[in-house]
Length: 208
Image 1 (cartoon, rainbow, N blue to C red):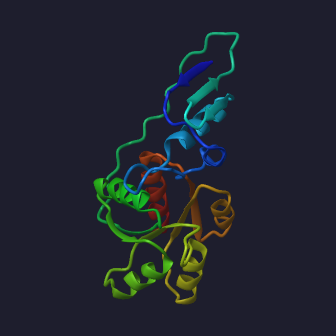
Image 2: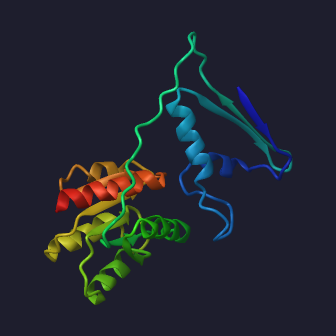
């Protein structure tokens, strides 16, 4: 067991009920993306462990990480190295209503050599497509957004006859179900920069 304690302001029951949700945060805009506890939860549960959290308003928070014991010494296995790849100027339209994540995805893709367009929802994405002379090579879109979500955006593109690969990203199972359509792909939130770039490269490579 690994236990971490603080003497901060603690969490209310409402906050505790959502603390492991991807991108849920009580911080102000620009103060964080809310990925930390979600990633911790994913890592611990994938290792067969579990988390125990105790918190009270004004009394701080205690997080206990419980990991399974093993009877034998295990040899560490390193993941296969991913060959560094650099884009050749492909254009990706990123549609995401959470500003912090939108900027983060832009930074990840831009550093790898992609050209990136940004839209906060499906409606503005369509407006950008109408005004943009270059057709994007890929649309990377969140599933649930206020004005027009990813599935509706993909439907409109199909009705217009716009043949662009669509990669859905979501912290829930809805995006995974959409990827049953061979025209679409899915990546689960939260994702690492390497996982995102590798997924985008695979889709673009298959579309050539």
